[in-house]
Image (cartoon, rainbow, N blue to C red; front, side, top):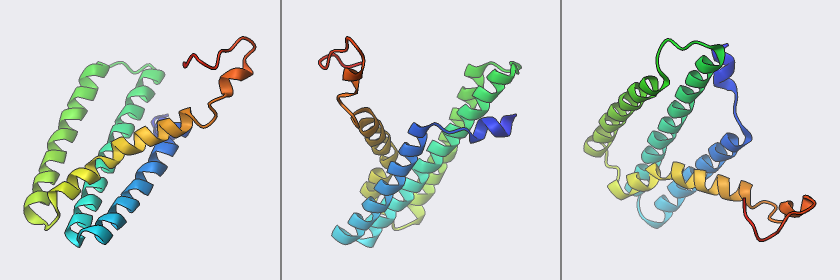
Length: 148
């Protein structure tokens, strides 16, 4: 049951993942072409760290929702997610510390790479939401001026 819950993906999540990988590849290429290989390395490492966090959070939410759907309510959902969040935060901080101190990665490139997940979410939602702006007119009494 838990394996099924972890494998279920919405079309929006698939689109977010697609945008994230496209932005990471483009950011790494542009960083290498316009700046330096250290900047590109920072973008690449930051993107991989951000994507790992995104997948880890997605998995945690899948486990939590799978447990809730199965009726397993041993632990409180808030406690479960808080513990997982802080473990992920500490591990991410440790990895970032190692990347900043032990690699020649550029810090601004690292920040740009960490933000590809946010940009990917924004672009996925924007393209899904505004793919057909006249879709509201399909309803009988819909107004094109009210967004919702």
